[in-house]
Image (cartoon, rainbow, N blue to C red; front, side, top):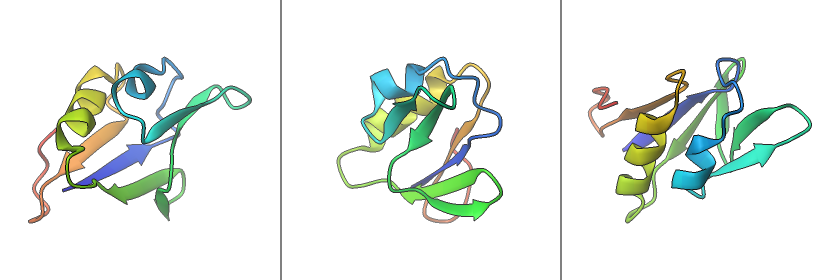
Length: 80
């Protein structure tokens, strides 16, 4: 499973930060940051979800009010 985070879409509500420690607050930018995420496109970051973090990643994606977080299974099918 991997997560994609569209930082440009993020509005800085930080609900993802409360749900999963892979996200941190960037108070200077007013947006969340996906820690360890690799930039795959301009302001889009991707990260493999570590074993045991799947549920937290799902909660983070579901709580994002602007759908800036997407989860994909190992076959590339979007889950959230």
